Structure formats: structure tokens, C-alpha cells
Length: 405
Image (cartoon, rainbow, N blue to C red; front, side, top):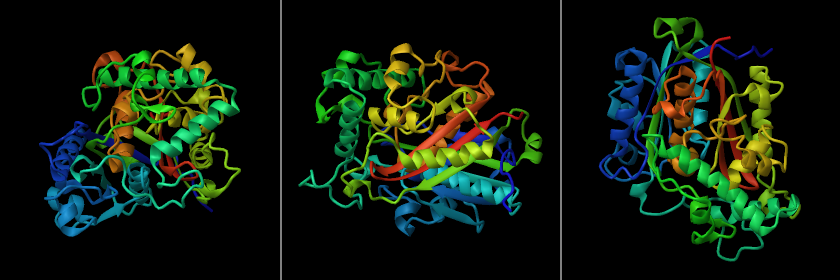
């Protein structure tokens, strides 16, 4: 019979590079920066690491271990000089960073290793294209030129408007509130990519990418890396008093038929529902809205934040507009969402996002948010949500991180 995983693994160190158009840094540079930040935070040296996990999907420029050797454990072993230690490469789309951390945590809980390193990394700007590349999804009958991420999420937005009785104007204003909040939060975050404060009018009048999604409804193309040091919970006090425990982890891969089914709903992410259910069961969460203090969720588009929060059970379905209008998702609200700026404004280097979101949770729980004006008060439990693919074909990872009971 499976044992409870809750509170068996601790995070004792984390690091994060600056996110953005890092033209002056290669993948190796960002890996080294994030990792040495984490080692310093944990008070250890590279020689103390027993094994590593690297999360990346492999969009990188030239001149790094990732391109010279293919995407393998050498992606971090070579730049970090891990010298024959085992390193595992994990790839699960946009859920990669959280899944890498998940696999490393399971190895620690199994007592195979004592101290492990997890690195999430992506160098998107050097690829020379916008977006996430080709996606192996069957064509949808409404498209003739192939599927794009903005196009599929636009279908989710228009379907959401119709299902919940929002006029186009009401729907667009709802989306604008998400983007304004994200940019405001990122403006106070020194590591974020897009730190410009914007207005609802700017969002509403921005160039259309795929209606109703405009320029400010879409995340940018970003470089970045995040890193974590894990150990067993009983050993955590050897490193620090303010360690963070992994409370629950969930992973769900959907059947992928939504993009070719005429009855696909578009307004609920079933994979998120199932991944959250697994994580909540591990953590003993009964009422997520009341028990979870804050959330870093997958908001590659403004509509994805809305549907993700509802799919996580943190907001009644169709009621996100009420939360946004009341300020419930702001720092001072009932359930703060994407205080970092989210993927929308902090940035979304695909393999790095899960580790970076965990970094935000970790720092907030310790009371060490960079820029004290964005520090949450008395937080004890945070949630990370990553979702890969497109509406109709998702995989989802959920992590719950909290303080000792």
C-alpha cells in the first residue's frame, strides 16, 4: 500500500536567475547563476549534491552543453562540473519544472539520495522564433492554416464568455483586469521580465493577436532558470530553520481528444482538476479556497489564469469576474494569484517556470519576498500550477508547498 508523501521532503535552498531577454547569458550561465544562488541559500557546496534533475524541453541557442551533446543530464552536469554524479533529464512540456522537482522529491523520499539538486532552464530568445514551436496536435476543423496557442486559447475565451453570459465588452474587461494585475505585481518584482505598469485601456486597445486576446493578454518569450536543493524533512534543520516542506504533488495527462471533439467544453481544464485532486489528497486539503494562502498558476494567456483558478477549485466556476472585480486575487485579497507577475509578466521560459514558481512560494513562506512591499502576511501554504499543451490536449502538474505544522 502506498505511504503518505506529505512532509517527507524539504526544500532547503532555492535560486533564480533574472528572467528576460538575457542576450548576455547562455543557458550554461543561467544554470550556474540559479544553482549557485541555491547552494549559497542552503549553505552547502557542489560536492554535497548526490544527484541532479534538469527540467528543459530543449529550445536553446548554440554554444551550450544542451546543443553540443543533445538534451541529456549533461545540460547541467557539464556547466556545473558534477563529475560523474547521476543527472536525470525530465521533459513534460510546460509542466517540466514542477515534474522535475516532483521526481527528485520522490527519490529523496525513497531514501535513495540525501541531498539533490533540481534545475529548470530554457533559453527561448536564441531560438529565433516567437511562441513555443510546432505542437503535435490534430488539426481543428475551424482552422485551415494550422493551430496556434493564441488561437486555441481564444476559443476558450469566447466559449467562456458564451457559457457564462458575458458580452464581448464584459469579457474583454474581465481579461484586462488579469493582465493589469499581473503587470502591477511584476513591476515590484526585481527578477521579472515585464515590469511595466499598464492600464485597462491599454489592454483593451492593444493590437489583437487572436480575438479576444490582445497583445497584453499573452505572455512573452523569455529566458530564465530556477534551482532547488531538496533533502529529507528530518534532516532539514541541519541546513536552516525556515525550510519549506512539500505537502502534496499531482500530475495528470489527459486523453488529448478535446481538439477533435465537437462537444469539448473549453471552459474547464480536466487535467488540472485531476492533478489538483491528487495533490489535495496528499496534503489533506478539504477546502482549497480557505486552506491555501496564495497561488502561482499557469497564466500563459489571461483567460488561462481564469480557467485554471476555477479548475483548481479556488473559485466557483463562472464567478472569476466577481473575484477580479472585488480584488480577491490581489495581494490584499482573499486568495492572491500570481503575486510574482505570473507567466504573463514574470516570464515563461518553459522548463524553468515550475521551479521559478516554487521559488516565489518558498520566499513568500519564509517572509523573504524580494521587495518587502509584495510580502504576504502570515502565509503557510502555497500552490504551484503548471499546464502544458493546448485546450483539448493538456498535461498538468500541481505542487503544494508549506511550513511545518
